[in-house]
Image (cartoon, rainbow, N blue to C red; front, side):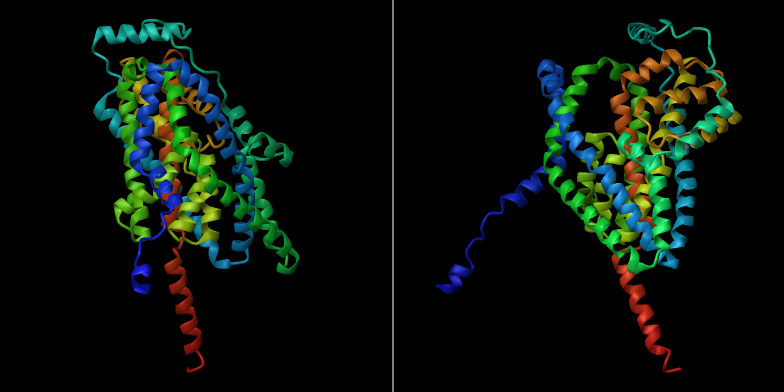
Length: 453
């Protein structure tokens, strides 16, 4: 009897079942499809429930800065006290060069092969002109005198440098200036690392407690992700409709393929480094993809990247906490894809032939310009495309309305590619728990062997 009772069915764990359902890729796809249908057929309802999603996004974003400050300062302190950690910074520089080159190469190749800007159908060109005119632009036939952007030159360079350094760190925290906060955290962490450990121990413990509390909060918020995704997709579809998507279908295809290429490559890198199957890696990263789609913010996705790599995939927590925010500011995959494919799209739209020097100029300028976009909103990132267009003497103002109309979709592609690139690069650089254990064992064996000599 006792054996029979012991072998009886276990109690149903509803939390585990709900977690599996909410984190399932099928649930994500179903919510996105339902959101599109709701936005198309019930736009009033979609707009009415949109404040719920905005409230959810505010909950997500309120955790970002405390998470960023605590993790970066704590990691820098730990790494300064460990001389062997300096080697990671050189690898980050190499990752920036490789990612910038691949971003330009992938998006440029897709743009040149698919030619999304070559619209041969006269009716489609008329519809494009009518849409631009409805947005308040100056042109209806995609042929107007080019007005070059103002010569920003050294003023732009000076403003970028000034924007890097906060004159008031509390003001930077209040206004959400991520790059300024990151710079402060790096410098403050370096200074704290030089203080003897007994003096800095209390602050180190406090930062660790803040970090863990933010981790708990992010785990709570993940339960509402599928529902927030449904509401946001419904609201975006109700606002823009499907006409801009069909008019810009070729360009969205290029951005989508470029994003998919980076996501597939990132999953491959993470699978190899974590020694998991490719499908298991996709399932593990699925909550991170949902966060990126829902928030459309690389910064808001950082807590999930850190949690994914350190808690689930067991990479070194100290190294992950340092590299993820740092690389999020430097690995600007999404903007690089946008600038390269966007400029080539506009050139094709206006029939501007591009030779090899022009293509090299587009690639180099796009890669460098993408590095300056940390902390910018999507529309501000988009407006900087005029700088690249200015070098090629091609118009940008009228086409700007087309990009604004599909900003939600393009911003999603940019966020997904950037977040996945940061996760893959961090997994490539950071040591795993297994590697750390092996190195410690090897060091202990070497110490034990020394007396025998």
